[in-house]
Length: 357
Image 1: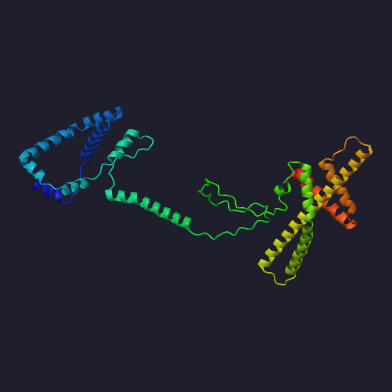
Image 2: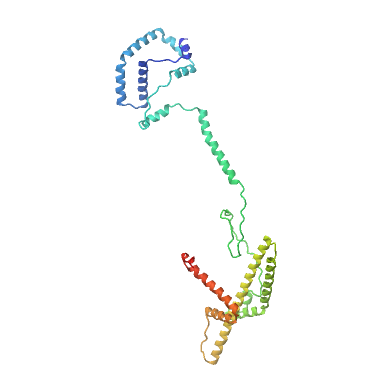
């Protein structure tokens, strides 16, 4: 067949200048109609080009009439039905794409940009799927790496032990709060207590009378005064243990911890001993004052007794303790008292003035 054989040939048609201009003008007008965009300038150019190309169109029409006379429609229809799509694609590729002058992006209207994007050749399905899958795969890989890094085992951090039992426990701030909640409190663990020093036992039979209760406590302390001598002996033994551990040439970490523990225990027992002596001194001051007031009332020098306040009792107890001290003990106590007062004043002082003194 004549048309199919011509289309299958690898020949690129070359158009004359007049025909190329005519073809570009007609295609531009068709594109403008499809886009719905019409302007006065394009209409004027079309009219001018139509007037200039009337003679050429007349000649083309004569040639077309001759070709139509040679090839009747009955011969063309069956030949078109037998043309393959590949041949049509080759013919379209041989004609080439129509080129337009480049225009700045600012002059293109949004309507034309939409149409251009609609008419632009779409990418193949396989390439688009691959492009969509690549970022997803990269995202999955990055998430998996993050998960592995998060689950990686970290070296356990060593937490230092608290300095004393009164200090707060040391715990990492990253420690997760437990989700378990105590709905019912467990029963308290029974603690062993000595009935000889229990307040319930000492106040038994007093009927709420404070004087009788204090007398019962005084009698209890007198009955068990020998425990104080036991405490002094225990402090002496602890000091011997500390000196023995410190005299070692090669000290282990366990020895260092034991020395710290023993020193803490010694200071605790000394403080308890001092507290007991201070309370005993205050009790003696109070007993002596009551005895004096009772004698004055019996002699008729006073009608009403004078009851000491707590601050006055403490003050008299301190003066009595200082009178019984030796010179070195007085100096040591005064130095301790001076440091205590200076520390309190320093806490009340503004932060800027602390470094100056």
